[in-house]
Image (cartoon, rainbow, N blue to C red; front, top):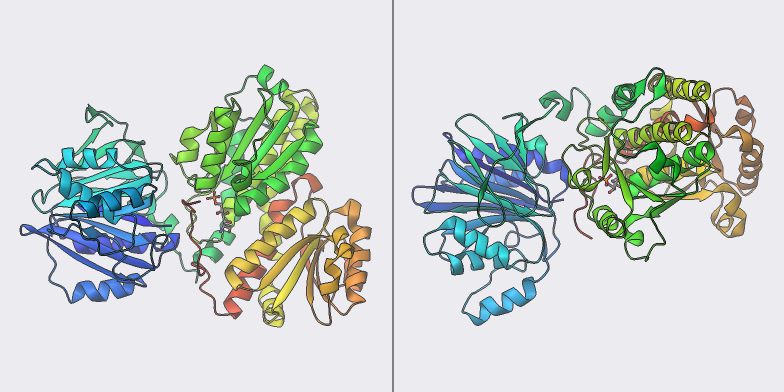
Length: 607
Ligand code: M6R
């Protein structure tokens, strides 16, 4: 969602801020702006729409200064117009701030400030912050900021500049991510490392309540009481090329194609002596043996990754697994005890509903394992154990390698736990791990097997509505494939457990309705063939998805996508690949903004 960049150094701030904002575009936004301190004043430029609009506006503005803040806004309070865009400046022009998150008590604060004579320009919750800063300022910027944030309830990351301190930029956070980039003679902060990595790989992850003051010479961090503290400087492990398109038309296509490599990074370091080994898991063998219920929670595709992982974990461990939407779990008064294990899935590690569900269960004494991609993210910090997926930066809003690496880590977890609790022996653990190690090459084969996908997209892209059907784990694949299709191609799509069609939905099947029938799960292949016949009998066109040895499907389906033969326990990552590609090519045919679909944000940091 919203993005923040801050800079101070020996060069003009505006170009650095604009470049940073371009790196943050992928998160989703509808307006953008910057503010710069220099010449004893602040200059602010902001606009609705794309960063290009902002760049044009900046070009025609006299803006000079070596310290500044920038923001991309995804509207929550008030329309995405120029006035509501960030930064927000105090009426006296002394302060400018940018804000991610939601100030929950803004209405009370606004009323109080208006009663004291303040005049508000925007409809945002954020504007209260600049008015509070003005009210509390007595010549000490840091003190004013600390007094201000002490009044705020809700979630925030706030960057602030002051015309009277042109070499300092402050940043603080509660609940929203914020990373300080430590450079030489210049320093930065950003809500996302992708905006920092072209400048420096040395970063400090701010914790809730901390305040950082950046000057060109250095970074000083304070705790919530204002006391100076020392923080570890971490090194970002990937470089700029990882966050660039590298010759592909879209990040999504690049990220799909990166999956053989991404899966290798997720799997290989976790195989020791031929067996799954999760050294990150802070759970003794005894604690593992005590678990009698596993809850997986997540949102969106990460939730569907959980749905896929459930089949394998249950099959191998014989422990019941419930997969819960985080936005529902948090309000469901869940039945848990010390024998429950919570597995949290999140690519970004910043999804607010997932964080809240996790906090809710942690408060009830449940042990938590997070499977996360972004290092140092909120979920990673909150978890008792964190297993990173090592997928590298994922820029496209539609997740691909984020999803498949989550599924692969769940597979490793299933084998690891099954052995630890005595459900499988050493030889079986080795055999199963050997199958998991095949996933990267199976993914490559899934890509190679299907050169016809752009043609299929041409044939089917104009359907206004379609169905994905599947059984067992293929149903989990249908759910994710359907989400992928609708979020980037804007085609209405539904995923159905194939056996459920007859209970109502088949009424929607009419002449030429496209049904994508996923039939790779061997045990239920014949049942799927019956479902295919049922929809064909009602005029549907069927695009079948089956394992390459299941040639019988050709007789029934109008077109077929083949996926590699693999152990049914570990098929999902290779099975989803052609369906990710199909969604991509359909969206391309439909002229959609593939990497930044309308109304969506990469990481959903509001409820
Ligand atoms: O960062 P997270 O994995 O927690 O994100 C969860 C969902 O918001 C995310 O998977 C979303 O559904 C994607 N747009 C799907 O492609």
